[in-house]
Length: 212
Image (cartoon, rainbow, N blue to C red; front, side, top):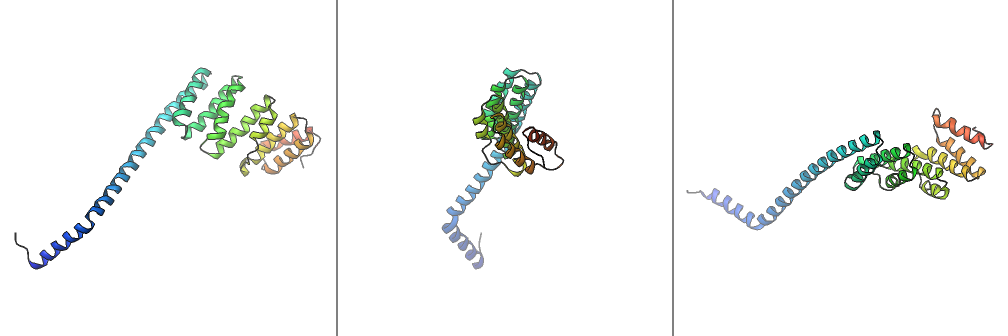
């Protein structure tokens, strides 16, 4: 097939461009395709993980409802090991702890609460776990440990709860002045209309303080 002079020049230009940049272009295209494939594969993996975690969490819910603590421990352990980085990990920790506490096994509740306090994906869950763990330690008279758990700086939304629980621990230690200060801080950090306010006021009045 014959080409005219213009077509031949265009072909020669394409050849020259390809000879100079062809390998680089192939490399870039390959990297892009591999990146896209990896991303799509990761998305499928994440979706599969979430689905499997949801099933495992459902099994944990059934075990908790049935008060079968052996199955609670097994299901929660599976979630922590395989799906701890998903939202179901932190949910499982709080649910398992609740099941243990309702069964009167506060010692067993400490492990999932500690896991959530340290490893929960969302800060809100970590703070909830700390407040609940401090409550368990308070009941066990492990006062220093409870105060240590509450030592982490809470967000504004949890400042009232942390201060209230700290007041509980200090009151149990017989440190009335420090407990009053903690309860007053709790009042300052708790919104008007919150049911917690009246409870804090009762505790404060019991120590000879005032809610105003």
